[in-house]
Image (cartoon, rainbow, N blue to C red; front, top):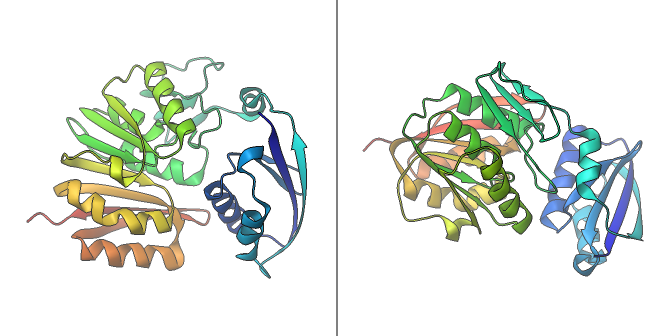
Length: 281
């Protein structure tokens, strides 16, 4: 498969703007990103590349920072080899050790997760994933039924099951993420997780005790009514993938309309994760 490489160089860009641009490029079909000295390179299958769509994404940032980019047609890379060069083990709150298959086990930690991310999002290194894992580590999950939306590699569902959840449903609309989740379920010996490829239409008709949704503001706002519908009264929901201003207030306001009461939030860099509970009627 041929790939298109779009290499960006920036001036005057903030870290949160870079992260937001990457998120929007991901929504536009780019599936792999590599840091460079002056910016980053983004990759997309040749058949999926649309220069007008790229320009549309960049137009949203017009005047925010300076940039230049080049477009190059390249042969497919060995993506596993690429991320293996930079993937380092991660320890969350001294309790959860996240490693790849080529790292040595560290059995001294209560929870160990083996992740083979390939091109899927979610190794725990991004601030949003880290904060969601911190919420899971602090939550009582024994016997819980968990829903993980926008699951990426399945890392949050895996940690939830290792923390005592009775079962988890992990959903992502991206086929690469879905396949990665299936593989990571096997790697981690967590058959209590069921994976599905889709979006809100893939949410099963059952009641959940805990919902994890690490996506982005717009998708969260679209799907909050669906989350509330399947969350039991008194259940917990944790959101991430957005910023404190103005995103958190928007999510709080819509959540309240659907019986979700704000509890607290965490901040890591410019990113925010927030916890809510459903009114116990």
